[in-house]
Image (cartoon, rainbow, N blue to C red; front, side, top):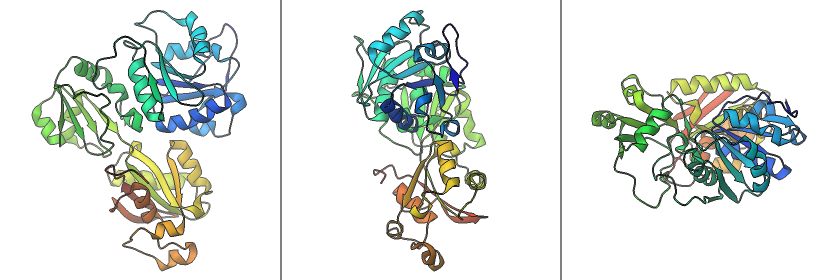
Length: 378
């Protein structure tokens, strides 16, 4: 826990580029859900709202006035998102301001999550772009008051953030951003994930070109690249990442069945081994799906909390609605469903085919499906 004292800059742990801060009961409830929708923010809130899972979810608690926390956040983060009244934020950040080339972006979100306001460093600091992306992620209205908006192109460090996409590495964010802004030839290859990522009411700039495959993008010899995929990149494809950013959309659903009392470590080991076998990225896991008999299974609850994965359960009747290639009378005898991992994965993914049919390893059974982005997820 962070203890705040007048005249001292507290020690914090920065893991992500943005900080999200809440100081009210409702603000904390919203903030906890926002971190699942927007993966690029570290969450901070007051100790009196502690819920017991903060260490697992890497949430940082503080004791004292939030005004004393802000200097540390200003020094380390690219942007700060405050679920605090606008007037209070303005008063607290006023003594911290240096100039528009150095100050971080500052956003304010109202306590009900209806509006996201760009407060500070709109252009150079990226607050306007962050406002649009964060507002889309949480379903709020963006409020940008600058006379002219930012250049209408892709904000590389926030690309897909509204959908929960994560970049694999931040190493090339700066040079690729420069290529985008300087209108150099930038190749975009998307293998999975949401397709409606262009946020403006105009056509994409001519320098941004979409290619159907990585091989075609390589042949085009772009000066930079944006790759969107849930699979591990092959050796010959890495040439695009010499000045490229790899994004991981939330596209993988894990259908899981396990014996009662199976430890989180065993479940996670099976998941890690299976994803590696299929050459899929763990960063693209969106949800764990199972039968409602497992809704209180400690190992699954701990695992999904640790990774901020959705935990979805279905009744036996819901699972039996899904056509199965491998129905089991034994499973039906004990659960009322003819299968668990396979139909659970297919149900959430809204898919007709599995990437992996059920595989049993020790106390765990796993199936994997890819989200069908052509239709709304159930």
